[in-house]
Image (cartoon, rainbow, N blue to C red; front, side, top):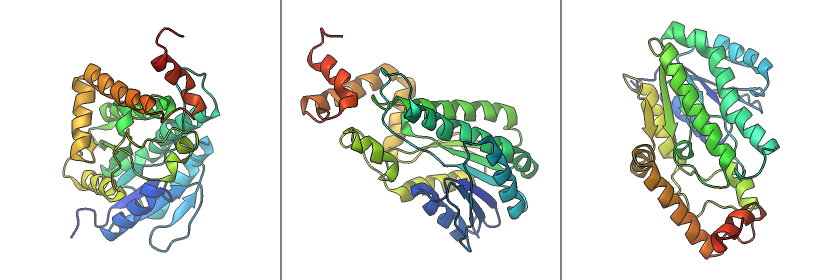
Length: 274
């Protein structure tokens, strides 16, 4: 019998790349699962309720999902969006959307689910990103929103950790539509991040959810564990590694057709210019 058998689980972003696989894996492990997503899906095993979690009124859908499950043992804050956003440019709608979805929606969902989680001595798993600790240029909104998500998880752990386990999972790059807008802007992550399979991310989430004690931080690969360690304990070295990788891409002309990278490319090729 799995440690997740009979657990009542709620997954946000349930129809996305991670969400679909995660809901299926939780169900296969014996959990009772309800999903939340912008688009509802009346699946017999893992029903998905339609809700915009960036709307404060979306808390009602969380309550409805918990009622449907008869309580809550596990919340996986998985919903997320990405997109290019250079730090040198003023924030726009892309930046606001990433902060709303990646941070504030998770905050609202957790707050709405917390009474049920406390009652059950349950778990919260936040799906962050390696970029929460090892940021990349031209994707400031994503890195900032995911780092802020980790800060929220840390604060939550201090407040409710006596009753609710709080875990952050740090995937690297997984092929999914979340990268489409970045690729269209000419800012593909090819050569910057090493892809990993979605199954590995889902397995890491399941291990965290089933562990006797909730782990604090979970990398999804051995390389990810090394990157997290370098980013946290040798940040200057991490900066140099990222700058060297970016410099190689610029030298190869990989960013020449990307308007959002124009300032970065100009400064690398002509250090004396602003």
